[in-house]
Length: 243
Image (cartoon, rainbow, N blue to C red; front, side, top):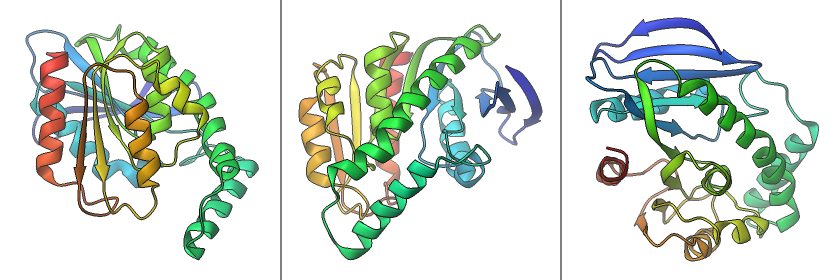
């Protein structure tokens, strides 16, 4: 890991950009802490620059609760090399949605499964580099999307103790079997009128999760219309499980 920039935000949060091999990322740590802070991994669906306003808002909210937060660039996003196969799958998905047609499982598999296979080891490598840093400790939470990435991480990464999953992206059916092996506490956010999401599949995925503690928080509205009180409930979830 190599830090490339550093700035102190107006609320005292320290923001540091880094690279981990070829993968860019950002780390936010609370301005003052008497003990190493628990860490929340901030999942997201796109490039860091595009998603930055939403990511920094989430990170500052986390810091106010005493948590450090970190995120990395997904494969094929931002300035990272594009995959021709993924670009074609994304175009096919967009075409189906614009035509009001059902999204074929093969399109979802072509788009999401390779992303999960590449992104999850990168998240694990980021954890390897972040946890030894001064001011950061366990436990670790995962918050956000892509929900298929969060599901895989919840199965294979024992350092993650709890997860808030955003049900706003398509899920390959192969991930349902993995969902049954998830045992950590889950808080799932679902926007009922999300124009780019399969609501029934999201409900089926929630049903498949094997966790004894799992909560579904569904609200009316589109993809970016998550109400503030839903975010507050997610923060309370992490306070219970990571503090």
